[in-house]
Image (cartoon, rainbow, N blue to C red; front, side, top):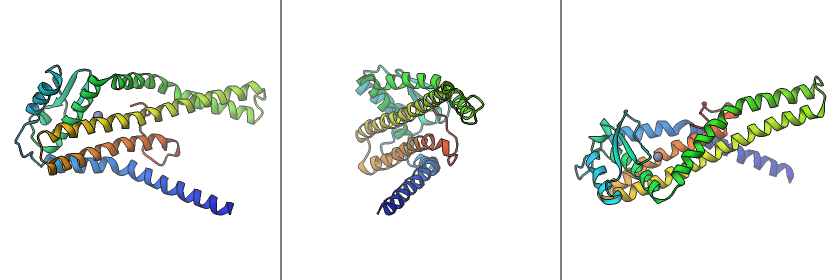
Length: 242
Ligand SMILES: [Zn+2]
């Protein structure tokens, strides 16, 4: 009986591992495929992204949002500012409208509470912690090995080694926690985006935008899985606290 349970557990872990690796590998290809596809589809209202942002800024944010320029493919929201590339700004494709709506979703999150800024602060702290990850793991491993091979046989060497390894594990868990929070925040921004889009687009167009935004969401899961499996060397490397 126990043998069957162990076999079942191994199969489940194997299937989950394959699923995580598949998402980690194909999410970004899938996203760029959808991006290319929906960059070709013009919205039925003929509205340009920049005019759409201005309309939403007026209707939802009392014109308090700044609209700034940024590099191509770097469209983003930062404290009170929606930054758009030249291409996004003057496009009227569904991809551009969905992208900018997502950024407006972040703007709405920012006005509704402090979860977005809290997340930014945590990421900042994470980047500092991240600097100590590798040194902590290496020192922890070296001390533990030196104890185990009797070069430094004192008990406190093992305690110190395990302590350093523990710090490394805590930093790793913190990185996973931040990636998971990021997914929740991105998901909510896309939910708000679909509400904005619903005000101007037809149902099939909204469906297409939802499909595009979902493909973007999978890239965040990919980042999560890459971080989760980074120690297995089965996935490409991804920064812990990007
Ligand atoms: Zn986002």
